Length: 198
Image 1 (tube, one colour):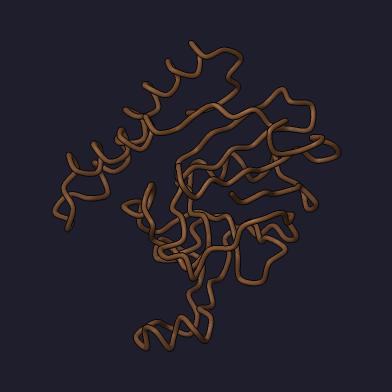
Image 2 (cartoon, helix red, strand yellow):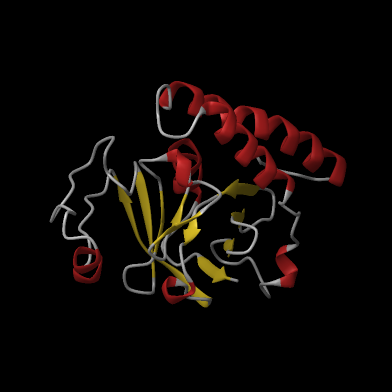
């Protein structure tokens, strides 16, 4: 897992270990699926190599009072720094599927939800009339096990129901994380945590 890097060497070692670890859950979930496990493993490893250590000072003037989150659309990853700068998390994520769904700039976390209900927007249902009106918590919920709502309506950082989306342009504007990653991030993030999307 990408956590608490205090040196470039530690970052590279952790990155290599994470590439192998991230591929493991896919093995169990995609037996007989559309995309083979080897393809998923290669994509996740390739995406991991594209990550770069980022200094929070390049994007935020302070980490106070609640830390900071940076989501990077081009490298398809999410960075988190705690308010005391002792914890740094770096996770692969899904990103918006097209420029029309992207929103960049500064916002903050305005709501935290465990086991969220997913309600597709009217626009989503117009594009795909087969979408349900509502999806209750569970393995088929596109928001996964946790959701962090951004200050922009309909934009979130959340878990995911289909891990094949991780590292891809696959969302309607949100940033999807592996459920075990969003569960690690969730208790560290507070309402009011600053967020920048680049």
